[in-house]
Length: 259
Image (cartoon, rainbow, N blue to C red):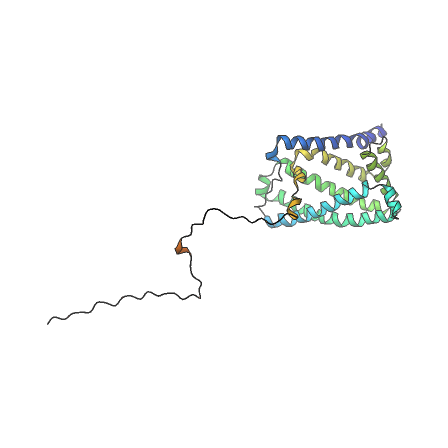
């Protein structure tokens, strides 16, 4: 029974999550484009939002890139270029710990702002808060895996997760068997990560698909108006150093005396 549940959660559930992730995002785009946004609340506590958002996005992008490269790169490539499993795992621990800490600080700031500011809390939906809580929990679980990874410096534990991830994306049967017997914190981390893919199309997370990457390389835009601006001449003042004409009062008329 335990083996069947393990296969269901880590052998079948990943395909269900990926199907909902891609198909649900497409349907959401086709049917709810007005809701395809990040629902920013930048007018409230802007400074905390800016710092929290920068740290969160910097950390999460580093974590996603590290997971993609570390899990989906074929093991034969690492072996061919001479990167040992132990070195790869230690690199993943250091990089993951660094980006995870940055992401944790930023996400905690965003969650605190969302929960403890009365105005922001009042304008937040249940899904807005749930997304931040789920991401925060997933990040904590990921950080908790570091001590377990340090207990296996040979890197063989990392190879098991690579074999599972590559077995899923290449539709290999029995991929779930690669991660049987690993510590429960790893399984919870994987399960919650798959669950995030399930809820992705139904939350504000869909704005990830519309990341404004083009703004980084686009040319500057010069905007001019066709209508000549109407300026009141009285509003155009000369500079302070300009000479100004001082209007003096006119002298009184001469007084004529009677002869």
